[in-house]
Length: 417
Image 1 (tube, rainbow, N blue to C red):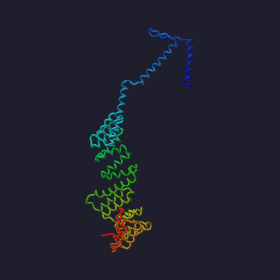
Image 2 (cartoon, rainbow, N blue to C red):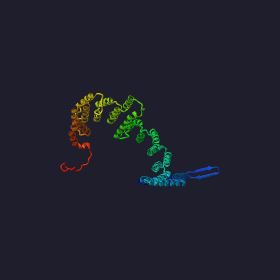
Image 3 (cartoon, rainbow, N blue to C red):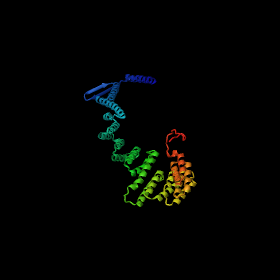
Image 4 (cartoon, rainbow, N blue to C red):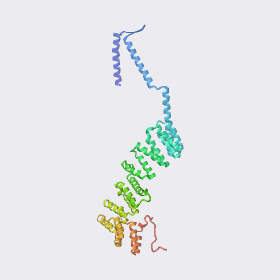
């Protein structure tokens, strides 16, 4: 309000001053061109120029800010197309979520034709076509998605790989994923799909190369990655022998198996399950002494109850020396049930029957275990103490048949045959 008042005051003052100038000296202007002359006062000319400038400015603004009829028609048409597209997209996505595949495909494909962002529509329509097992329509819709939005090649290719994997088209899917690895080398979802393909193809060599990448980018949880590594490297050990010609000698098989084992990552050669599988393969090739030595070295470097139990199952080259080695571990692991079980078994190999009974009983006292119970009962029966073996089994029935439900039982006095 104050600004408006101040402006009015300025205009009045300026107008008064200019009026005085006009009265004092109106001025004279003569414009002559060819045979035409225009005579006027200076102030009239100035006012005419100002009014002409204002009029010109208004006309230009009207021209630039007002749309022509064709432009307005196009804007209206575009807006209407977008409304139709959004409405059909919503209906199509609803049909897709409800499992109405044919209707979803039709609605989404039609919406894509009017949409300024057709990628989502074409991908969803391709999914609907795939659910109807319409491979041609699926591929066509994916191609439309690719051609309308070239910059979204990674997104389209991932959808294509998922569909190929679902169809069981493993080789084409692998080709798609390998191309994706070059386009998006850090995409963890692509890594997961590639992992699935290698598993389906039983390509353990390539999977073993992928595992470090999965670990580096944390594409899988630690427990999943550990299980995958265990499975992969175990299969590599098996394949190292299976791929050899039938006539290959055991000595050459041992060399091949040894090379495969030493090529594994260092941490995997300490994994209990993998060591067990390697040991089983060594035993199958008649190399129990090498298996015993390998186990002994691993146990010395890193104590593992599972490996200690496995040590008692291996028949080393010298049974007495093997027993002495295991006894040496008692100094640091006197309360280990696995070590006591192994000592019992090694005592049997050395025909130390009484000592074996003692070790088995100590192991069973520390940790009741069905395997230890079976060893002790078997030994007692062979020693002619079948009654004690039967009593032992009866007392530890829960170890023999674990998981039995709690049910009422008759007393011995009331039991009838």
